[in-house]
Length: 339
Image 1 (tube, helix red, strand yellow):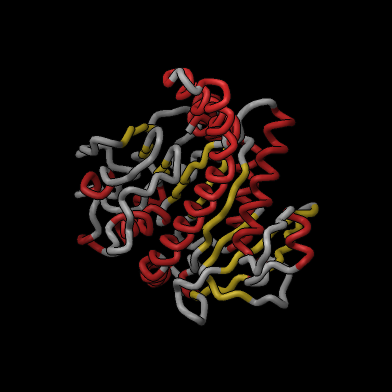
Image 2: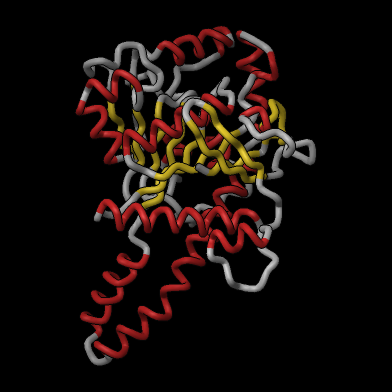
């Protein structure tokens, strides 16, 4: 799978430790791409060069004159994998852009993302930020990660803009051909032209792109939504899933109603979420109720709130999209598969 990161990286290392615990030394908005593969229980990580090598261009089938950034290699390889998945499974595939939460080292993030791929049959791209508490523990670790989360807002913004750009590029590559087909077949029938165009474009780009935010990943997204660089007219994602959101419940509708997506915005709640209960206590009395564990004041006009509190197997889980809750409870698993 592919990872996008604003962590500091060490290209000489080939394991998860290639990713550092601090932001990129050239600045927290600096992005690098990496490719991870697992053999048995071991992960191999290759930090990609900033510019595509001839081998990368050949592997991704990129023939246009360059130079090309590593992100173009990632985009083309993902498209090839999605097409292969559709051919094998006979149904439109899904891409999940996953932003992890607090105190996650990269190996844990890779294992979770691999679990997503296996359990839900999706391709996963990970945005990984320096969520390691700076080597600290307890409250200090939590507050350190919150600072790194805030510092990572610009990097997430850049990553989503890149994703948007490549999706538009892929659509434009198909648009001219589809319009010519429609003109040839339905030049004098506007309704039929529209129907043919819509169906042909859907076939040409049949996969969905979905944003999955877990825990403190939602805190980054909240500040991204409120940032001066946020473009409200970007329509990148089909669904947006705010899972176990470690961000304030009070005032969440103000920024959540600005989220643009083609289908649904989901907020998942577990009143017994052990991590969010601990999160609320860490900063003392000023820490407000967390969006992912508080079943009141759910006033967003856009969001669909889904309460997992009494679902069988969920108990006090903070990651009920995996493990026992998802594998033992078909309803939980089916929700996240559809979302």
